[in-house]
Length: 349
Figure 1 (cartoon, helix red, strand yellow):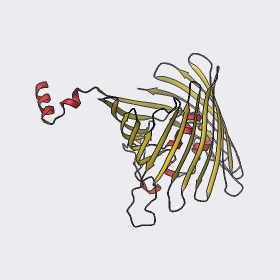
Figure 2 (cartoon, one colour):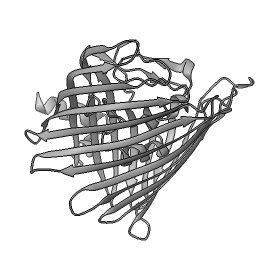
Figure 3 (cartoon, rainbow, N blue to C red):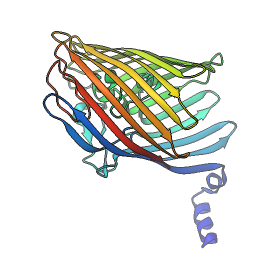
Figure 4 (cartoon, rainbow, N blue to C red):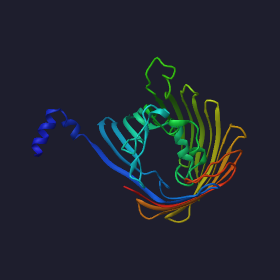
């Protein structure tokens, strides 16, 4: 059987590729817990998912072509571990392009890449450059009861995190500390219509990194007939002797709606296995009375092994100006507070 397989492979001219240095791996995260949200109108308790990290299943691989050049791929699907359903994706970077219906989609990543001394070029579906500053700044990793309110209420629509039909380029390190991340993605609409450019946009992120400091500036614009979506943000994370401090500011716009937000966070190790995470985040828009939400959150994470940890988070939102942000599925009236709590287990493989 082995000889027969080699004969078939040789017939298609693939022996060189098979013998080249390469690897393919399966990986994933399953995160489940229980949560409680409280609000002035309705409370909610539930089996919750993604309190520490979003659940996902992925495949990645790389092949060494020699002379410092590699080709790789990454296919990553998000799913709801409490229900066993898949996530949706946007095929055209627009609200009317969402598909999924609970089935398998590689909504988190669908990338083919080539990398060399000149940098890395990716094609497919990936995170937009400006999104990555949120991940840099938020020690809560943008999920669960404590997720930054300036991210969970972002106004910029389908491409605030990822974009389809894109080309993405990362420069090599410049001056030993600077990397430039560029992106251009297409809505791929039928031509000859007023909305032919909807879902088409570009982004850039400048990343500075040394032994202690990581800082980023992000900008992105996506075309929409009803009004372009614009994202601008700055973020940093600094390693101090006893804790890690992070923060960000963001200014967003979609059409005539504008918003600004901010975040300050800290990650404090309290033992060899435990750490406390603390954040304050804010989100405010230019709607009448300037609705504003302020969120305070604290979390404890305890590592049980290399792949497993437990966590718990407590968060509280203060609303003003007509804001009615609520946590963990609760519902609250305008200008009334909301609280959220979760506790869970995350396992990676």
